[in-house]
Amino acid sequence: MRKITLFASIILFNCALCTLSGNAQPIYMSNKIKYTGIEELKTYNLYNKKDNPACNLRINFFYPEIENNKDLQERLQSLFISSFFGNEYAGFSPQKAVKSYSKTYVENYKNAFEQSGYQEEIKQVKENGEDFYTFEKKMQNTILFNQGNLVSQVINIYENTGGAHGASSTKGMVIDINTGKKLEYEDVFQVEMEEAISELLLFELMSARNYPNREALAEDGFDFEVIRPTGNFVADDKGVTFIYNPYELGAYILGIVEIAVPYSDLFLYVKPESTLYRWARNHIPIDEDDYY
Image 1 (cartoon, rainbow, N blue to C red):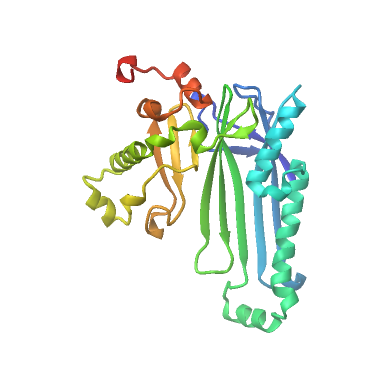
Image 2: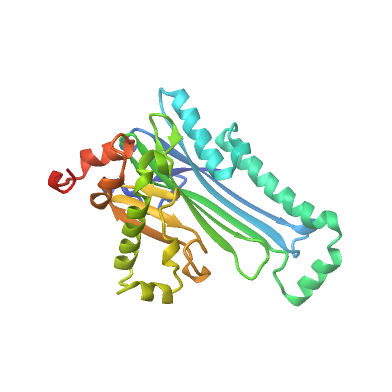
């Protein structure tokens, strides 16, 4: 396990990619939260034989550190850990969570095959040059936004358990650092406006992909009737991006779909008392006559 430091592109406080470095100094972004990363690479070959199929795990996990506020640091770290590894790891330190998850991943792989007498099958797979018993998992979180009282991150996971192709998923989170809690959909958006937000999402998707009509959307594999707001979203200095994992909006070939909506189009549907609304009103110029 290697400790690393997060470099973030803080131009407009929008970080699209994070850089891992073993030599860099910590970066304190606008709300004085430092992000430190842990990199874990784990490979285990069945029966400890080098030429046997193997499981391969790669973890890049960034967690927050806050000077002079131990209580908030503990709450945020617990949220980051449980969201990344699962609720059963919430009480662990970041280092222990990474090590425990890695150990459990390997043990589950070993128990699935070594305890079940798969020697002959594994031998056949090796002779045929197949990857049936080769597993792979990659996990990484990226800090997208870190300003004021808000932190936004995405968790990207890719996993292949020996099938024809692996599966990718993305989970977005917006966190209110006043409370140390994730903002749920109903914390931010007016739930009675769901139909209007759905139409807005459909419009933004069609505009971004240059679809002339709904029929063109359907031809590409989208089911426009299921395009509705989701609790899987992130926020940055420009707006809110709703994230849909494979199959959620239609055919698998669509992959992970992101629909970005600028704040200027969202103000009507965001709760005025929400932390996100207050931040946006203080930073995004709007024409009051358009909303009141």
